[in-house]
Amino acid sequence: MRVDQANALRSEPAQRQVIKRSRWLLLRNRDNLGDEQAVKLEELLAANAPLATVYLLKTAIKKSGSPRTCEKGREDGRTGTD
Image (cartoon, rainbow, N blue to C red; front, side):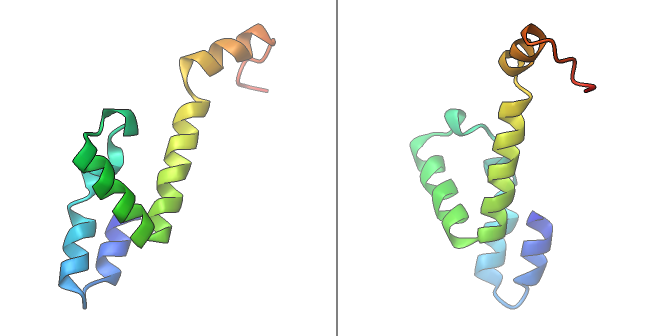
């Protein structure tokens, strides 16, 4: 998604560079970001709706697969293959 967004911005080099340099910022956990990085992430997500959507999905998937969630599922009798 990030590459697609960067390619769509070929006519706007400054914005394209912002997207291209955002890979690790998007991959890091929000809890592990410094103050400056958190501000950059918020600016990036506010300026680019498709990236914001993918970022939110990544966060939701990460939360749903957390060990705490899996343990709760096992306690409820769910195996993950249901």
